[in-house]
Image 1 (tube, rainbow, N blue to C red):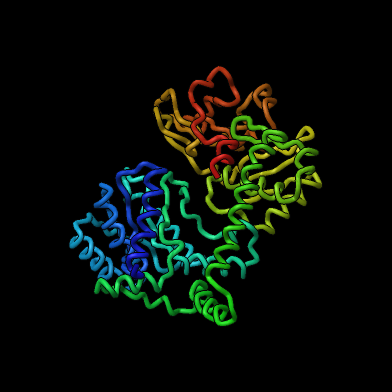
Image 2: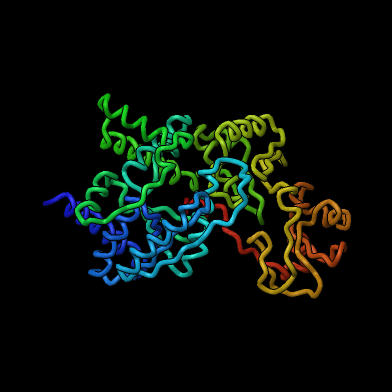
Length: 419
């Protein structure tokens, strides 16, 4: 069997396994025009025809290089030749970036794919074995633990609700280039692939050095697989531990102080990280050192704040709520089906009213009985219904108007079960 036949056979098995598991009849493909994603496009076309799956393709123009639009149009030409619908989406931005450009571009890319996909639930990305190794090395350099060293998963769910499928994770980049050469298909080369200002390129060259010292792709893959199993086992235990020592009331969480600190250190770290991610709807874990600082503070029964999440001691428990300044400027009209923070949905409309955090001024308008319902930190972040500056209703505090809003967020235990 030739190399190209082996690649086609391997990808076909992977896609068929995905289809059997998820039952899709339509797939999105994110294609940049580089060798990896372009080979994926042609390989998927043959499989899709045999398996009656519709393909739709998207190319993201990050508008960081003047050649990018031309490259996107080149992908469009490939798709036209293959009879695949193709769209170009553009990242609109200002050039004065704050933060890591690679991370910003990645976040924008996934956001744009989500806006483009409509009803498509599964999107293919052309990450290869080389990308997996580079990710492993980048995270190793950062001192990452199990979660970083497990590498990329073949299937991952995005916070927006769609799934990323990576059918080429066990395929070498050079093998895909050889496939394209045999088919006389030219791919695009991004000049940034030789720019050592990007950490991934540094690790790409590091890997070449390591290979000369006896390192192999299969061994790094094996190490990542060990980490994946450990990651899965630890995460399987988190909901069990939370059910034993924690509970949720409205949008606040409670952890038994003694029960929480009787857990192994790794579970303490994972629970704190998961709480922050759930509370602020983030897909990124907080930094390890920041989590350790929270653990140190709450063990001393002091208040700690991390990523918009407040941990404080109350009635012998660790109580967790949202930091007021993180949400105080968020508001929606009190109109049916509007959702505040994507957590509380309006069930009864009030003309000229809006939903916002009760806040400091709204708290002053609460009665003594209402204030006694929960501690200040948790009280001021509850949803209030206002007309101008007047608080007319506090649905989570006053039972008489509880039917104005309904909880529509993800419960923490469900979040743990799905991550």
